[in-house]
Length: 232
Image (cartoon, rainbow, N blue to C red):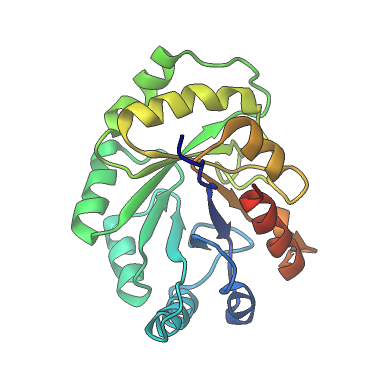
């Protein structure tokens, strides 16, 4: 029996080259830059600086994370302008983007596409596979991963709150059949991520506010988070 691999780790909301320098040695798979309205929003130029640092490290033979841009209902022109300055590996779409738009982004910008699915914190009803299929089947072949996140009434996601994890298995079943990755976000932190990973074994986990202290990325918390995800 093959050993289970640890989920991928995405640290989102990076704004500082100094922080990036401090964590680039950790086994982190994705670094996220927020272009949507948020207190963690970065300019295209700042993201370009962060991407350039990672590319310089890669040229030195260091294995570096893939870069992810987080967007909410971007236009084609906005993506074109931002990707020209900050050549990302992944575009994460966090709102009502259609399957057709996801396919366009994937094919025209030659990036991977992650599509978020917002789960209401107050909704404790576990959907059926038929319900999930009706929601997500149109995205088959247009996205590389589905990201479950807690619904936020202002931004759609990024609330820093957990949702009812017992809905994860049905989304995981759909993702397996569709050949895409299932990532989980929403209120994760060093103290609860190992519980999630052990119980539900998602393909990846995504954290932002859970590794911050007073709104600033905390190297010790990031290190602890990564260790607890990758703990055997």
